[in-house]
Image (tube, rainbow, N blue to C red; front, side, top):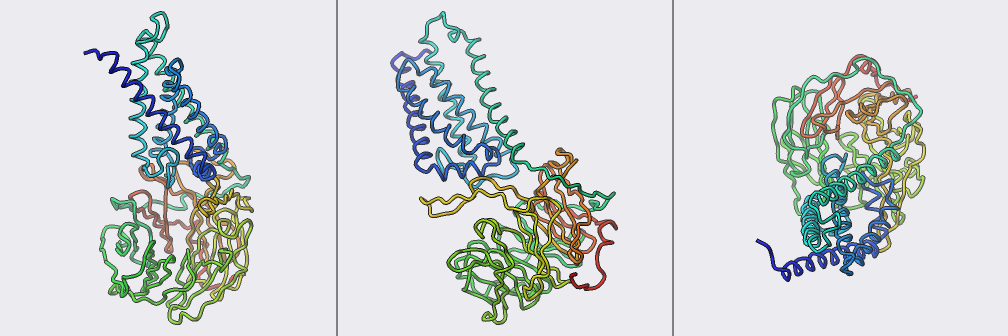
Length: 510
C-alpha cells in the first residue's frame, strides 16, 4: 500500500529533524568537552594513533550534515552522508565489542550514559531511518537520474557501506601498526620450557588469582568480592568459602583478597582498611582502618604488608610498609619509586614479594625497570627488563572541567603483569622483540624470566590463548604456573630450562 505524499513528507521531515537533533547534540557536546572527548578517543584501542584528527573531524562533519539537512535540495546527499557516518560508528562499536583486546570504560560521543551494546542498537535504528528517508526522497528525483533505478540504488548503498566499514578497519590497522612498538632485542626461547598439563572451565571470567600454596590455588571474584574459590592442584576438586568480616559497615568500593597461607587478607585501599584472618575458618578481623589511601598491597609476612600509597599534597606514589599488629609502625621510602613525568601515572606498576629471598620487587608498567628492596625497603638495586623503553611514553592531560588528570591516549604498556617465585621474576611483557612473528604474538602471551639474585635475563616462553582470549592473570609455584585465560584456568608444568635457575638456598642479592 502506497502512503499519501503528505504522510511521506511528515516521515521524511521527522527523520531529518531527528538527525539534526542527534548531530547538533553530539557535535556540541563533543566541542564543549573537547579535551575529555579527545582523551576518550586516545584511550580507544582502535583510534588512539589518530585521536587528534578524529576528535576534530567528527563534530565538523556532523555539523556540515546538519546544515545540508536544513536545505531540501541537499537532503538526499545529507542522508547518504548520515547513513555512511552511522555505519562507521556502528562498525567501530562492533569491532570494539568483538575484536578489541579490551573494551574502554566509556563509548563517549553521542550519549555517554548508554553502554556499548545499547549504542550499537541505537546506531542501527538511525541507519534504518536514513535508509527510509533515502527511499522516500528517491521517488521525488527525476527518472533520468541514475539513483531512480533500484539497481543503481543498491550499488550506491553497497559502495557506501563498504567504504564506511573499510575506513574504520583501515584506521584500526594503521593505528595498531603505529602504536605497536618493536624493540631491537632478541629473546631466548629454549625447547619446551612450559607445557600445558591440565585445565578447567570456570564458566565465569570474573575470577582473579588471590594466592597459591603447595596443593591449592585460591581465586577471588570481582563480582562476589568476599567469595573464595579453592582448587586443588589437579584443578578438579573445588570448594567455596564465604569470608566473614567482623566489620561490614565500611564504605567498600574495590575489595581485594590476598592469600598467604595460612593467613589471608581482605583490603580496600579506597576506604582504607585491611582485614586479616586464617584460612582454617575464613573469618577476618579489622587490623587497620584509616590513614593514607593505597592502591597496591602485598603481604610480606604475618605482621608486615607493603603498600603503594600517595604523598600528601602532591598525590605522587610512594612505597611504604605497614605493621598490621601495630598500626603506628609505618615506614615510607620515597626513593624507591622514581618520577619521570608526574609521579602518578609514570610510576604505575606491579608489586610482588619473594618469601624465599625476603625481597620485594616493584616492576614499572610503562618502562623497562624494576627495583628490588629488602624487608626494610632498603634498595638492593634497580634492574632492567630486556626491552629498550627506558622512559614512560605517556600523554597526560589535565581536564579542568572535571578536575581530573587522565591519559590522553592508550599508553604503551611495557610490562603487563609479573609474579615471583624464589629468585625468578616472571614478567608478562607487552613488547615484541626482533624477529618475533606478530601472528604468534597475537595468539599468545609472552613471559620473560629474570634472575633477581643475579640481575640477569634468563629466557622467555609463550602462554597460548584459550578460545581467542589472552592470559589476564597468572601465578608461579615451584615448577608449576597457573594462568587465568578467559573463563579457563590452565596449569603449565615448567621444564628444567626454567627450574634449573632456582636457587636452593636463600642466597642474598648480589
